[in-house]
Image (cartoon, rainbow, N blue to C red; front, side):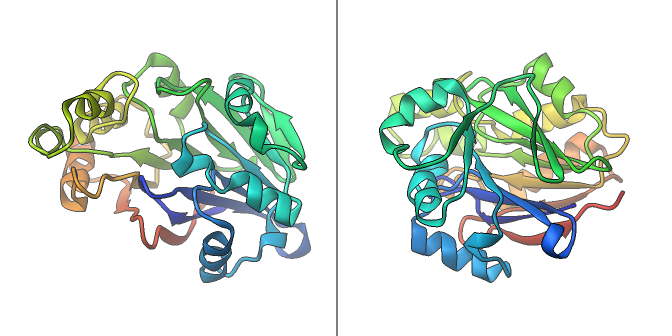
Length: 259
């Protein structure tokens, strides 16, 4: 199994997960916050065409995650999976798109991939994140959550790779020019994960299989890659999984997960 990012941040998010080989390969896109042409351009950069996608799975209705989903899906006839709450928020955009519902605890199969949705605390209708497996390895994804919960810690335990939100540095956010209500929203219990909180979550996880960690969804105004990396390294206490940081402009290239 392998994964790659088209881009990660408040201006747009999309993650590819792929398993298999040749004509039997399964590839899903997690969220799509870019327009059709920009999504096509970023897919091409990763050696992919729209027709290579077997489905799009959605985390929640905020525009940096869902803004391009339905136009792209309609243009290229790609089915979409999302929670009922998310569907309620975006149903006016779903005309002509093959929609399926999913929820926490109900695993869904797309080709060779099995996806396990789990709920997270975020200011959306019914936000979910996913653990994806091809039967041999597991990729955990956690972005757009305001705090740690026992449920998300349990859901992400035993993963081989992890995409983990490191949205902001608390001190940078506090001293930023953002309006006070926005600071409260981002740093609140239903906002986004700070570097410190991401590190606390990482420290709680079963990391016995963990090979790779990608810090994701960094704020361009209120964080730096160096600060995010420092928080993740601190949680690991030295030696451990390889750490890298995703960016808004380039995302990151394909990463293979070894069984």
